[in-house]
Image (tube, helix red, strand yellow):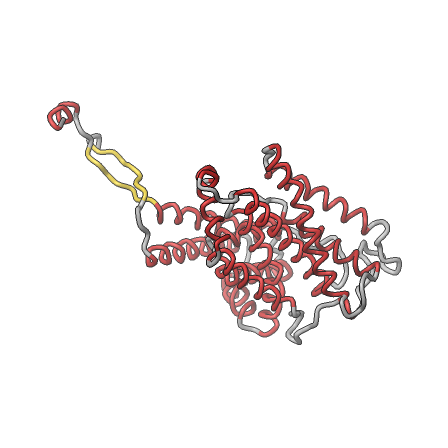
Length: 363
């Protein structure tokens, strides 16, 4: 073996069949490892398939809950996609979501606008608040080249403290002992579809997904995004509006995260609480990576992840499985997908070493 060496070679072309096969393989391996983790944590093997699949996707109650959980996950996945396709690491999705929920609640508490327009104003305010919150790290990135990882993460802490300040202070419901805001009026709530807790926000999430697919895959802006994401210097050299494209997409990322918060408080909670949006940053990044930054693939990925959350709640109640196990399974799935992504793009070759004498003869 001393006469051979291992080398990595990048594949010049990757077939659709290879891409699909590696994706499915990585997903199956990740889910298989997740099942082993659940078994090791004490989940019973005899009912695991029923708890993870049948009750989550094939029962009316379970499917309704899964789709309800998927609505904000679709938006946070699109938020992560919008930023990360440009190599902007938005790890403050939770903070932008909390600001969006705060913006919607601000409109509701102060009765801004007419009753007929109150709900649209709340959703617009949530998107605007999320965009404003991400504008700070964007500005620091463009003007002073400050690392967005640090700023977005720190701003999430600030957003949570602001949320706590409001719920324990001026916005606390006086008739409730818990730190929650007063319940929204009927005209400030998204319409129920009569299928569990599922609300009309799912239509908005689907429409935004289609619009994002057109923007990223079919428009000139999408071409700009691809070039900037691969090489920003080259994009500048050939005259692509880098700053304008970056500003548009990063503000869009914050707006989508903020809108996710608005949909949670208007569609599910019907008030501002301190428990919304937990772990949405990690969930959004996982969804974007698993979907390989394809907007249309965000939909099934978000629904699958919502099913994992739904099943995790069942396992927590009946078998005492902690929430950390669900997060661990997400991490395992992401890691396996990244591993197979590497072998999809590269091949390992075994080459014979060339002796110095042979090299001189060749030259």
